[in-house]
Amino acid sequence: MNYLKHVGKYFIMLRQVFRKPQKWSVFQEMLFREIEDLGLKSLGIIAFISFFVGGVIAIQTALNVDNPFIPKYLIGFATKQSMILEFAPTFMSVILAGKVGSYISSSIGTMRVTEQIDALEVMGINSLNYLVLPKIIATVFFYPLLISLAMFLGILGGYFAGTLTDLFNSEDYIYGLRLDFDPYYIQYALIKTVVFAFVIATIPAYHGYYVKGGSLEVGRASTQAVVWTSVVIILLNYFLTQMLLA
Amino acid sequence: MIEVVDLYKEFKGIPVLKGITTTFEKGVTNMIIGQSGSGKTVFLKCLVGLHIPDSGIISFDGRKHTELGIKEHRLLRQEIGMVFQGGALYDSLTVEENIMFPLKMFTDQSFEENLDRVNFVLKRVNLENANKKFPAELSGGMQKRVSIARAIVMNPKYLFCDEPNSGLDPNTATVIDNLIKEITEEYQIITVINSHDMNSVMEIGEKIIFLKDGVKEWQGSNKEIFKTENEAVVNFVYSSNLFRKVREVYLKETK
Ligand SMILES: Nc1ncnc2c1ncn2[C@@H]1O[C@H](COP(=O)(O)OP(=O)(O)O)[C@@H](O)[C@H]1O
Ligand SMILES: [Mg+2]
Picture 1 (cartoon, rainbow over the protein chains, first blue to last red):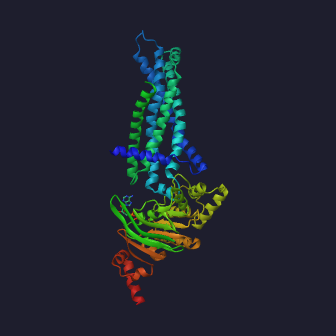
Picture 2 (tube, chains in turn purple, cyan):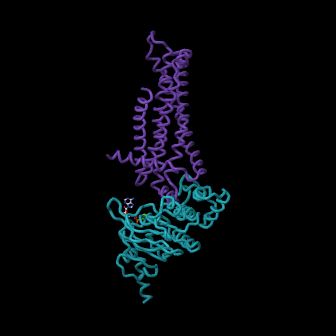
Picture 3 (spheres, protein in one colour):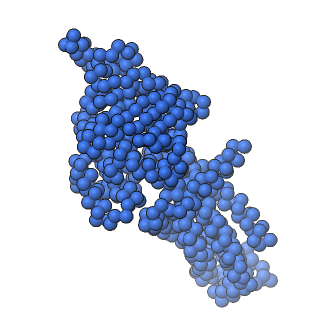
């Protein structure tokens, strides 16, 4: 019952968020700030994780298919498929939920408990629109780029893992990458990414915006935000996969 | 003139404001005093529209809150300046950006014009050479000045200050109090100040409203507050020994 109340409040919040910005120049300035804070600043960690995860997938697959009847190009194929379908869009989104989600909810929550949000409202500013809309636009447009990069680096990581360990050779790996390549998979992954990006911007914003109390509550809200954002991503991942692939 | 008639506000069934009626005139420093938890902040937030009262009328020069649409309400708010208890400066923006923010949002002036105005109000609150600092780098008194500068940058008709000198040393507190009084007289603003500090009350309290448990117990000036026989006021004001002595001397002299 309580959950339902939150869901309702969340959608009412979104109605306030999706208004025309009061001043385009101010909106633009905020948007660039958010692209940097929510996007560019996560570039490093996403690149690092995806590269090594790609490498590990390739090695694991290679070690598990030492049966001579199974062709070696399967390693490239498996790495490509898992990076594009799951590891880049879903796994990386969960990581972003932790990193960016806690940042969003604690920064908005701090603004709430220090009356900065009241100060915005007193000036006649729609604080939800001003604070949250640029975050949504930034994540929804930037994360597809970030996740595409993760796919590429993951596959590259697999390639390096093979050439450095002699577990498989690069011709087989590349053959596997090309095998049965369906652009729809990329489309599917990017649709998921856009949905997750929206969730990563809005659920933590909700938790931060409605926090009551002091810094302790802000900390608690940001933990809650990360948990719920991850849960919602995992659930939506299931439903979207069923809808788009099954 | 701001008119408040029979204002009620409760939170989850617990009444906080229980029927407050009063008026605030321009050019005078109106003060709301009372103990911590007596409802001062809630009252101020009802006035500026951050809380929606459960019943009662609030009217700003004839414009009643309840009769304004969302748009008109936002327009009215551009005539309101507010100084929050903790300053409420935007901590990701510099001093200059904080004060310029309402100008950028609501005017079409150029950056240079905005900067001129920012420097003008900064000078008015006696804070120069702090433009590029962030709020976290300022002392409490400086933060309050920036907060006042931001509140008056749009030339408000109404100025609300929630405990503007809480957390300041007595000297700085007096300076801030007098600054608010000067600004009020200079620009003929309707100013309402929350306070639980008797020094401020004696310093600048031209019209004083004493709140107790959400009820207006007493109303008068800082001259009258010495002479009143109202028990609740006497208890509040003379919780300090110093003021009790002052009262005795004062009453003896005026007899
Ligand atoms: N948002 C709120 N929700 C519930 N109770 C509140 C809220 N704001 C204030 N109160 C209660 O209203 C009473 C008056 O608070 P407040 O106006 O902040 O007092 P003051 O400013 O005079 O110290 C307190 O008992 C406080 O707990
Ligand atoms: Mg208060």
